[in-house]
Length: 342
Image (cartoon, rainbow, N blue to C red; front, side, top):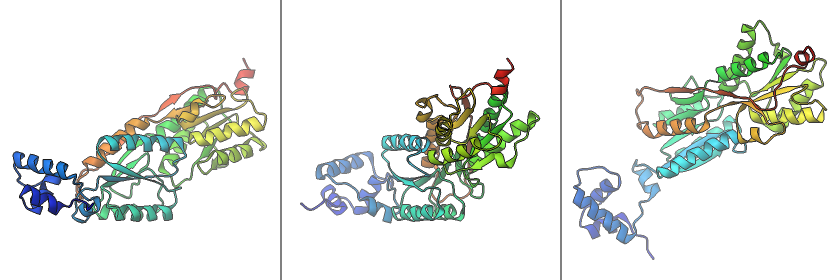
């Protein structure tokens, strides 16, 4: 059976094609009664407007893009789920792209999203070459950064106060008497990880402590890399009594390394993560971590994306900073030296 076209609807309703198009897109000076009649004809003929045709005419495709580093990372999978749930309620579809924080893959996905004529893009991935994103903005595609920011590009962003999160982690360990500490960080190109490390070191500085650069180990954001890096620290000449991990995946890797090295957590080693993903509640011991308000961030970023006017370059850009919280569980305890002195 031949699919119904806009021409069929116009002929059946006794109006022009332009009038049907205006009704579909909510434009034009078409009376309420006539709009209702046209919608009834569309329903009777089971007419479904073509997404591709709408895109070619500069209309909405009700499709959004979401760039995240790794869908297997619970933090980003939780963001993706929250975005998809909200998109579904608003009648949108979401194309989720896992980038591995690789600029080449990011550029490839952005070209794909442009070909799909998406109505906007949420970007939660680390980007080294900001020009890749700038091209989207130049083509009047609304962009919102989530859990990331790129100062070189004037776009909306919703993120956590990562500096404060790092400070909270350091403050907690200092309160427990830890001075011999180390950090498992993500790639330095990520603004989030950079700020977490900076906040941690600043809190130490305020307490009159220092942290040597060699005590900060850069890792890929995987459990395997967290385990490898923690094993190096624990097998070194001066193993730390506490490790701050810039995400929960690295912290779980550190827990595994401690178990295999025969180092008891938290009696001999305290471990603190960042993100408060579902994984932090199922480890043994359960993971002390810094919580990010994932659902709220996704909700705000999604709202900003839908409210971003196409083609407007002088709109006031918003930078919304959410507050992190320390969630204390079982993986942190008093420094062994502190406990021995009691």
